[in-house]
Image (tube, rainbow over all chains, first blue to last red; front, side):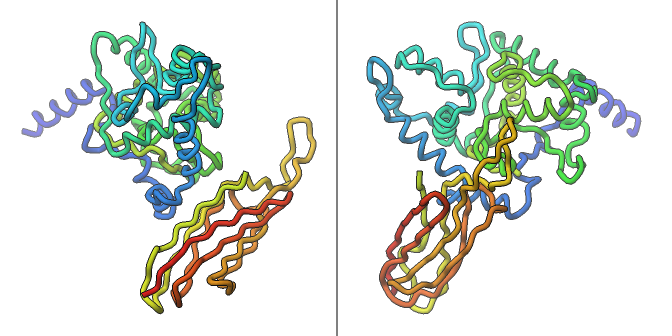
Length: 249
Length: 106
């Protein structure tokens, strides 16, 4: 019996390669202090409120040459953010990039700079509408190459510290890195209001922080490698509820 | 850009302790930071919040450079009579933001 259990344990380890089973998945929310959780739960005066209000205004603002607003074509964005990134004409595309495609393609307006106030606000406003819905990224023929690339990036040792994402976030979550708890790296609430940033930021900003932390090359905003990593992380968080706009320390 | 939200109960019982939450969108630039070329970024913070309840001051806070951007202040007062809570934030560079909330006391 014991041998059998050991065999099962070994086999399942091989299967999942250190990935976190669904029952053990924890959102970053669960690692936060009571006070920081209260900030996220406070819908009426949460710190990301002004960004959401900006996003709401941008949603119905007529833009570009044809003078159309997002609201001219789209009714509700409910359930959209839990399916991003997705594959669009042979590329992995995240929500920010999709918004910019709409701007340049449909509105004939200039794309917003990555991490600009406008792009973050509109992304947060769109993603907010899926708050509470489970993340639903499909692993299929079209998405597999990007998800595989993202998984490879997640497991690749890099930087002067020669660390992979998995070494912290799969193997050592729940332990401490200096004073901070290492979370499981589930991107459940982006764009987030991060207290350290004193503002709203994207998942790519967070990823670039991590890359700088392990003394690796900080890839430029919008880089395909970052989108693939985002894609994999969202797939890895499948079934978890979206918290946008989350608050993180 | 002065942006403020106030969250206070619409109605309360006489004598009840009510909680007022207010969030101001502000960068709270400390005055200690420098640009990449070494020039000091001038201080730009909110310095004061005053709350009056039907013209009577019930709460006052002084803010200082170490406070985070987008300050959220929560305080309580006793619901005495129906009327208006008026919050006024003031700060550097002529920053003024006012927001009021009406309350019905039964």
